[in-house]
Length: 302
Length: 276
Image (cartoon, rainbow over all chains, first blue to last red):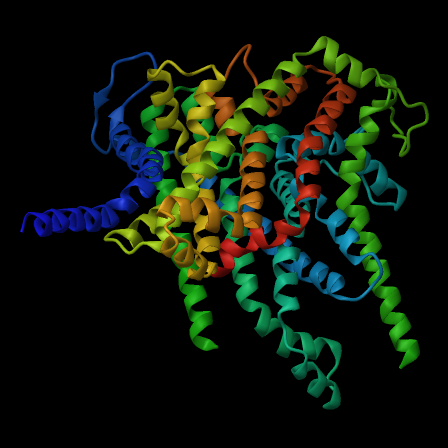
């Protein structure tokens, strides 16, 4: 009797510890997740309903920060600007990345080595990239205008003009991240079956038709992944914009990220900046839902 | 047919050449600027190759700036954070991949969200927290803050890796008397080796080149490489050869890591997304 009950207890203990064991695995990371998501979010929501400037009293003001934002033209103009930058920094790398992947999908000597060289930009530190482009964009002594002058194109103002600053900054992103899209699409191309192409050749299809009707639909899931990754990264973009233009000239390249940083740390408007965070989060959520729905649609159509 | 083949080969080579030139030019420009004397950098007609190379940019960088301290700070932070993140994340990723428990889906989703959110959304509360803890203006603050980037990322990627591995080997090890932790350490981690290496390298690179949090949390004397280098630009006539020398040296550890582990990188980059 004694023995069996002891055995039972031991068995139960063992079963219990087996059931509870995942807790020990997951606890540390969950703690970090709480530190990253739950705490900052509750704190941000709380800050956004307070008048909080560093160095003065914190005062509850309800939704006043949001009301101010709704009429703040400097803030409102950051939204279309951020979307403009994001669209350029997503679409162009995806298009160029597909071309690059098609090139690297061909057979030629030293393909692996050349591919390794081609993806060098994505390994570079963004700040180092931002610094070298700052130098290259200089209208008088920058090398880009010099190179353009060799082929007869007039000097550009690059980041020194309000009209061209956003496309120019997006260009840096395009340069750095096209190789990533290339790698993703190349993975897609490598997984393609050869039979459809063989029958297409027999049916007399040309290169474009083969791309449009065979390759493109088959690599679409990979393109969606590239688009999602690029959208996330473009929305995160801070280093390149801040180092190259600090949001200037004037406020011409002030994206939401830059505006947030300046409000919080140059103007010390913590409450105001927190309200911006809440709005930005809502925008990101909307974009995420659009992308996820698009991805699901693609799945159903196949 | 043969002529057409030759034409298409020529087109491939031409495109390849253009792509490589575009990809490499800014990197080449970092290098060439770092070995130019100051006077040549501001020439109206920039020279595209070094006419009289000099190491003055490098010696000035080491003697006149705090570059050595920046490298030290960046290296300490990047190593501590990426190593501890891999440790925490592989535990969590293992649980997410192998155990059935209430809230698993929810935690997995939270981790993905945490990875996807721009750091700009978090820097205000994190800054206030770090300041209250008295860790602002020191690299300890960064060690505290960077896991908020690296842990969600590493957990997400490692979860997909662990899921893609067969459970058979683990079960065999456990039947032979291995504990769960033992199975993870002796079976799963070695099998997931390439994924773990790639994840470590990405985590290291993220910390090594991180700018926004360092800008917010550090100030004055204590700086990391990105903050230090960007800070050199404030002068009216920036000493570009020094700055580019710094950019060159900064890229060395990253290039070494990527070269050593290049065959793991492609799968490491795409797996999390493809399987997710």
